[in-house]
Image (cartoon, rainbow, N blue to C red; front, side, top):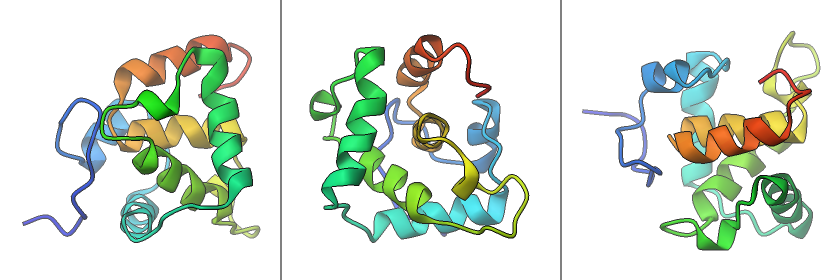
Length: 127
């Protein structure tokens, strides 16, 4: 039995840490689980966070309003990652760029097609 909340994924795979790592994820397993659990309880309504997610997706041709199941999963996860700051940690996701955080959210929700689109339009960022 999984301790992770049920979250709709892009390709309907079960969310697992190993799948996240297969997609290139770098967040450690404890933080990964914590972020997913908090995102399942969160509904981002902060216009700046919603705008940042849309702004990051737009150059890749991604319209978040047309994501199967709605954009809330991606936006909520991005919002949790974006506002989770740990200044004392080395390589903490609170120190990542908006584009990197958005990519991590796509990895965590198993949207490999969208992931490829975003990575391709930001060639100078090490994802």
